[in-house]
Image 1: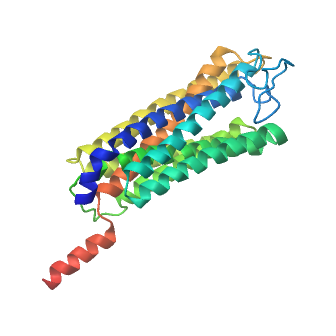
Image 2: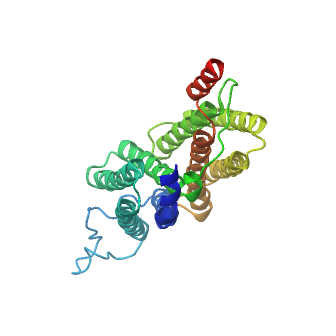
Image 3: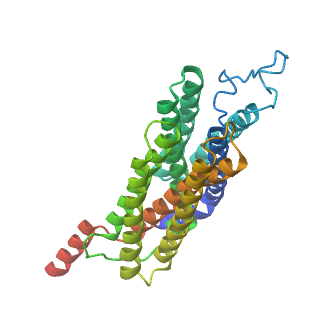
Length: 315
């Protein structure tokens, strides 16, 4: 642990850069949600260039910013920016970090953003939006929580000497938090599938019910057993806050979908709630993932507790 403590000041720049990258990924997801909500996915028919609809000599770089093109092109510009930032983050981690996992996560994040770009290109060039667009959305969530988790791993807090707690009850707080994150991720898959026409609404609604159960259970388990641990209480607070906002946004988004069902063009009363609902889902997933990682950082696994007990008996 002494090596980690000495490395913490050096990796603080990487930590701040990872946090910055996470914020840009939120902007990227907002840009992508704006493309879908404005029916702008096919506005620019080529990839990786962006000819648009103009024969001008610079149209490959900056297409005419009209109609849905402005949403699709902005999405590509933000995606390119995030790709560059992620590459810089991976290189920076290689320079300042000695921990192998940090280095692997840095290049994993870069690989994910490249895969995300390629999948977006497949969506543009070959279509099949119900499948490719859903996969594109799911990969975006995977990339987001990878960078969020990397930021937490690079944080000075993670690298400090921290007290370790036992959890002898069933189900374990670590397990409940991990299951909550998994259920939320599955729910986001259902939401993306509904949004892109792969599934109907009912799987998404059932998923919302399961998420509610797991989020409430995670809060009960962690708060009752570790009320004295501020990091865990704080993580639960943010999870409940984002989940509560997401439930509210889900109701508003559903109202907007029903209210504008007969409209021929997307309106602000449809676009704003649906985009906000997409972002709310991503932030809820990130909050649950942070809670899970915090549990794994502070709570000893059952195997470690059993070994500790056995040593105590032998002594």
